[in-house]
Length: 412
Ligand SMILES: [Zn+2]
Image (cartoon, rainbow, N blue to C red):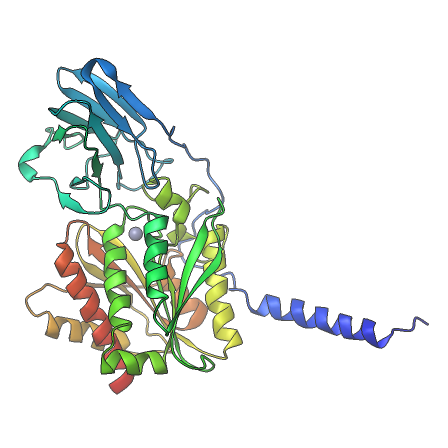
């Protein structure tokens, strides 16, 4: 008979406890009515370089995080072509571009944006410093008859001109926003894991006092890299929750927020149109967890809820599309029944001059809103913002969304 020392018994029990707990802290695989294969697919990486058209003294580059420029050539006279390719195909029509231009003399040039088969989508934004952006005057953007190519009239000089599909918000910008928020006493900045290429999965933990048994609200954004307007709405939403108002101060004492502002850091920094570096739409992997970004965030949410003996009641996932719309689940969520009806009604009352669209649907593809409902019995909402929604309105709506949510969850 083998005799075990007290230390061995203790070690065995400890291992059993650790491994036993670990499995219960993981998100369960789910069956969705419309399955999707989310195993890795190859992607095309852009060459990072300076393109020099010396005879015209025109230079272009993609040497920054969030750039997308696959080729740059002189076509004729003052016209140049910027070729923009997706990371892989098939892919939805979100041809994101971002590059810089300069010359050693002041001159006007035309840059034709060419995306292979995809049509132009994003109105060009320009900047002189990569931080402050304005919309390129619409009179300086021409589309060809098919809408495939866009021709941009640009003034270039020794002062670098940044041109992008949306205001640049790469992983450094998002991290800096997190660090700034983490100066507040109710915010802790953490890393919830690593992306496929090893970038940080940024995370803000928000709440005051002991989080145990407090209801959890999870917030995610940027599963799809070009969807900057959704990210801007998410920032306004979180900033209202962090505001020094009686409502927000009460809310932070009562609830616990888990925020994941950059779900696809590799895709964002590489200028991807939609996918991560596994070549996959992350918002189709919320059942299988083949991609590390979804797997780690899903597990992080489940682990927080289980460790703190809390319920997740609500998950909001911020995106962008052609117009503002809230995609909701048509099924009721056990942990927060009827919330969305009151929330949308409150939204409509406060912003009576704005059209607030809601589009409910049954659980179908393995997307985050279905995951919140089926994994956690929580309400799941996709908050979509129009690509070109005025930035002031994005902020106003994001702030209103937060106020209406907090009022409902505290007072009603
Ligand atoms: Zn999206």
